[in-house]
Length: 368
Image 1 (tube, one colour):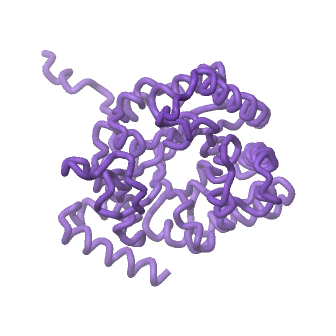
Image 2 (cartoon, rainbow, N blue to C red):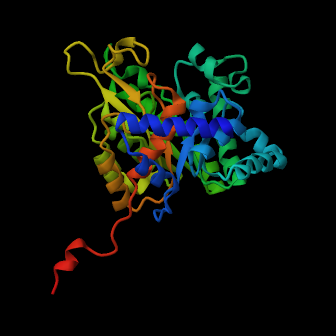
């Protein structure tokens, strides 16, 4: 734990010097007795190169309430969880040892393969050998679907009722609509999604678990209108909910606050990730120009929470207005910043924006 305390102290000084937050605010955010019901968690997906216990040690040292646990990198294996009760007990023991809770598990990488077309080397690089198998595309999709069902079975064993993830899409490749794409082709993509995901969601229903789809470019639902379409295709079944991450809306010029309000009945989980647009120079493009993360020629980039263009004050006010009481998970991504500085800074920033709504209207004091 010595390393954790040293990193924490160094981060305090860096934040104070940068003027992003005062030391008093940082310490108060980490130690105050919170009356809001929302726990602040760390998504482990971007930390999957570290052993699970090491991530727990870091998160606890920084003051996180718990984790959103990724189903890769050895952090959580849904197959092992279902087959071996001692595996789940071991995960719980590690969490308990560090005073952490778990509120959701996430299986983005495997979920991506359920509907994707084509299936190629990109998928091979991120899927487990169990899912990739011999690489036959339809076989990969079928095995991925089975793991999503297994994730639904594993979640309640760990004590959670939400699995966050991606769906994949057979029609994302047509997003530019050229060469010309017929409406029949697009509708076939939604039909493919429905045929593949309804049986998965049947298992979620059986287990009393929700799948929280992260609305994200590359998925079947990636903006406002595709989200509305997907909910309609599934007849608004409750097992299919939404993971709200405002960063994916901002660079598309979609209002994340309006999205949150309009889809308030479907929000099952919240990820806090930020994005910075760099579009004003007349050269940088919104589509990223096939440039790597962190390249200054990109039109936008993910940045540490609080350093981008998301209007977090408005976001948290609407979360209060819709009575969202679930976890707020820091999904830390920033190609230009070290994560050991970014993760505790993001926690302090998020905590500083969490406040309770008043029990009485402010203007009641005007009454005589």
